[in-house]
Length: 352
Ligand code: ADP
Ligand code: MG
Image (cartoon, rainbow, N blue to C red; front, side, top):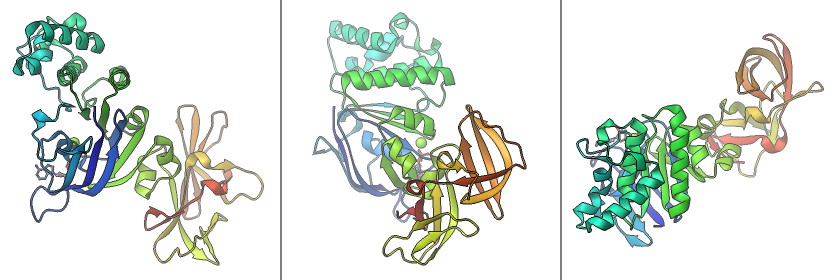
């Protein structure tokens, strides 16, 4: 078990190349659940591999419980790492796969057996212990990969690099549940890498959103939803994507031309590209003096909610309406947004 501290950690794969991971600092609490969320190529695996020791960072340090492990080999970090594609010894049985790290350390056979039995029980693999690992399904193979990492008694953390990508959707849920149980039972710091926002938001207490090698925002799922630090986070998290409407500053307010959407400009707002952002969920349909009036351009459903693309002159915005309301393309619709849900962005970053 470990608290993991990343200290101005960054990485370039070669001198002169741009940062695959731009330097940042962060601490992960002992026993916490974290998700690294971002599109392909944003630096998620780079970060994870530095923490597990597969990669030496070009900048900064990694500390486990305050101890610098930056130069320590993977084998000495006691990390259970699981990759997108299960890593198993195909010719070995499930039991042999699970016990392998202990065999390598010369642990007595009887102790290995006890430990393997308890891990297999925990992961729901007990029935399969005698089967050859290659005969298992993809999700079971991932459990074996995970189990092999957990079999040592001194595991510092579990790192999972898109481990659910090859898994059937209905099994993903089950696997996530097992991961959560293990996190709670063993109090192991668990970091899940994913490009799937639902996976990140349902699994982790804290989500770290990345884009183009940069850690853009870290926070609880609700905070990311309510106050995205950048327009990118607003688009990436939530469904449908957040609205960002081009705005301008006039007489101490930030307003969207063609509407009466407006927010008080904070002190020292300065120059730059301004926009007002709000979630489709936060728009309210009103009949009297709406802030934006337009025409329903398109309608689709998310669960029982109706989502409307509303066209107001040059603007298109998305409105999410709780089930029941029935609109048709071409209908006139007016909306307003409560002031607390209107956020100001300058050059794509949240200012207020
Ligand atoms: P992710 O896991 O989020 O998809 P990666 O961490 O694998 O992203 O990659 C981040 C960036 O670093 C990408 O631009 C990728 O092309 C680059 N990269 C990854 N591995 C190497 C490598 N071994 N050498 C050079 N560049 C690499
Ligand atoms: Mg990756």
